[in-house]
Image (tube, rainbow, N blue to C red; front, side, top):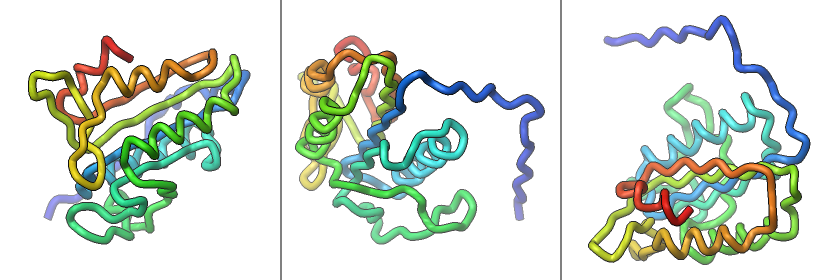
Length: 173
């Protein structure tokens, strides 16, 4: 059997304390287990390495739980412990837009917003899109970016997109 050996880096990245708060939105519509696992890794990284407060992280996935198209998930294979990610809503357009609307009241000029999208996407000649729960709905890049454009002024935006055809989101975002 193959064994894994984890090497801790000698030099850790410096811990930077931002002037403002750090917020995050994780989104995965028609999730497979691999998408949930990617988000779990990202969630743990933000909380345990970068000091994001769990209360400032919104997770929207599949049907609003850690379930995926393959079924129920309770244990993260990364280390065999229960998932830490707290899913707060389904992976659909309405939930994403509600999360952005909630940030309109919270974001300040010194804050950072991290957005991670994961799951499926495509481009059938009409523009890149994210797939949405429950029916593979299309959330287009232009609509996604327009929603982000409604946010008040803030310090930094970091966007990590993993779905197919995510490159089509670059220009609009």
